[in-house]
Length: 221
Image 1 (cartoon, rainbow, N blue to C red):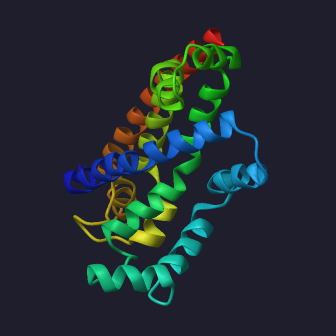
Image 2 (cartoon, one colour; image 1 turned 120 degrees about the vertical axis):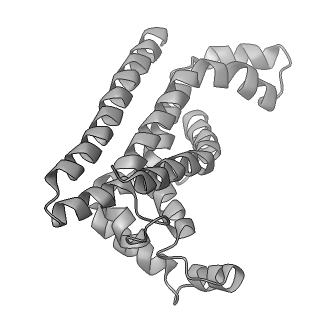
């Protein structure tokens, strides 16, 4: 087991959730409760990481983060190093790749709340923020938890985007999925098998919990 790579994967998974959950709550609630011009386009853009091959997404992200791009130049001037092949670049790429895994379950959870519940809360004098924290969020928590678990598990197993944007720097961007690839390249089937089994257990456990929460959300609706 490559414990350093596992540590990088766990750190990346937690950091990705910290970045994405506030964005997912805002976007998911907005898309579930509002109708506005361009909504279909925003939903399509959020879904793009699901349909693009990871290497294609990684290529575009690498170009976007590169030294010739405004984002890459701005980051390099502040941080003193390039955005690609750094943990910061890997985190940003992971957040973009996992955006649909967070936004879509949260959006569906908010959509499952009957509109009459919000109308009743508004009639009782609750402000929009009070309605969100006292009504919407408690009712949508299974979807929020599902989104968090899916994004975390997907981050641990992501390979193409990680390799394209983060590279293979031990202790910095070398995640467990990259370590598995390295072990296979070195014909270390046993080492690769142990790490692959770890990711498999995480994936199965996550899907079981996700299915349970999705069932509860459906019964509630």
